[in-house]
Image (cartoon, rainbow, N blue to C red; front, side, top):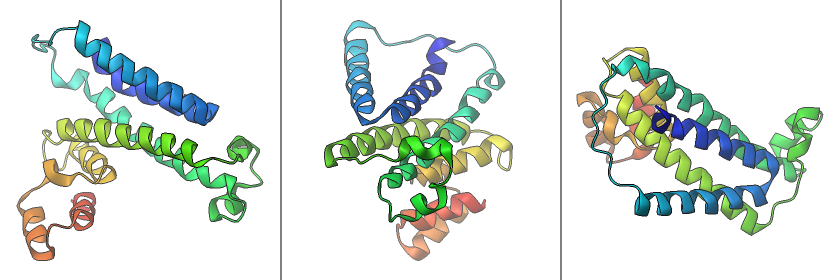
Length: 183
């Protein structure tokens, strides 16, 4: 069961590193990269079949959406270092957000954006794809649409209507992502 919880655990660890600072994000990035590379070399492919019903894993998949939304919110707080930004003007008086009032170098921003993109794209797309297999108009299907729209990867959530809209507007990811939020 631990292997199914790795995505929320790693995403939570990345959020903690975000709060600690950009150096912690770089440490997380290199640690996660080493974990993946060494794990691929040491561990064999998992050929076991999951025998417990789908409903036992739904909570883990649903948990990814609020974690990714929190990650996106954390990325907007990077603007707290710029005292002329709108986010600073809104949150400057809140003591909870004072920790974000720091200056980031270009290298720091690159590390934050790199890890954020890897986790938003990787975890959001996988969880969204798995939830797309739920019944249409169910809660799981709605969560999958939000996850796929957040990652700008609506390919797994296409239905006939989305295909028609995409063919009308062209292959615009924005139109497809907005359509996924509406269905």
